[in-house]
Length: 101
Image (cartoon, rainbow, N blue to C red):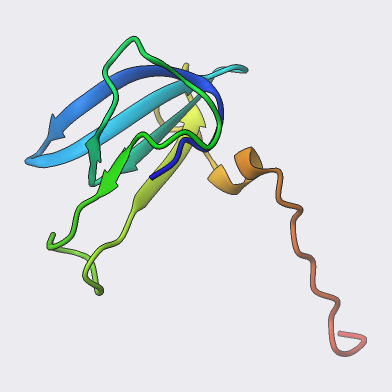
């Protein structure tokens, strides 16, 4: 797993028996990666694209061998989740309607 943006690691450890990494980014954004076995420690500064850990396989709720649960939110509001793809600089895809409806 690679960091989606530059930031400071605020948590790297188990939550509910699964390894989790949380990183605070400029602008008050916090990203969380789970289940990722960390290669970094709380307090470490990471750069965008840096290898921060390895996604582990074999957990419940995943239809394939390994899958990532990746979240982003405003760190001041635990319920204010945002689309983490904005951190990657991807543009939103907008589809035009097929008809006049």
